[in-house]
Length: 242
Ligand SMILES: [Zn+2]
Image 1: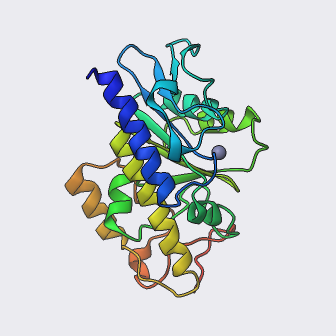
Image 2: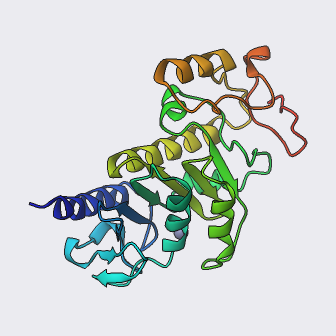
């Protein structure tokens, strides 16, 4: 089996797994993978991730033209914007996953760092997530907003819509998206409960030990000073006390 046919099978298998676990409903959500010739494979428009067919995936050439398969997802510009600014991205996953969408609507999230460092795996697989404001579906401004982040994030949350997450390959992008969703679930479960999040020193230790992006854990406030305070800011940048 060629590398491309293996990738086609993998996209369908992961898509089915995401769908069956309720991580994206109906025909929402899309997946893309960068190919060695500079083109892409992506899920088609109006396709449920639960019922993908490897033969009808959209094959895109390096200039963005459809070469074979069904018409690509209408959200392809979101993927292309993230690929354009993240040369290391080998795959991108976009879901309408419930907990991430819910977190995107909370009034007190920091657009530069949507979720606090609650677990080591969130820090290791995601690091930081940026919030992009709400745009009407299909508005080209959302791709511009992703380009505006200039590749500083692999994980972007579209307000009232869902996450767009890049990984070095398909498996990494899928697992990072799942980690984001689980962290969003924890954030909602613990809302108002004053959870103990990782301290700045614990985050720095992860960054050093695993060679993570140095910008992780450099938020404006230092939770090490208040180890029991949630690292959750309101629009004025003040910590909430519970
Ligand atoms: Zn979407």
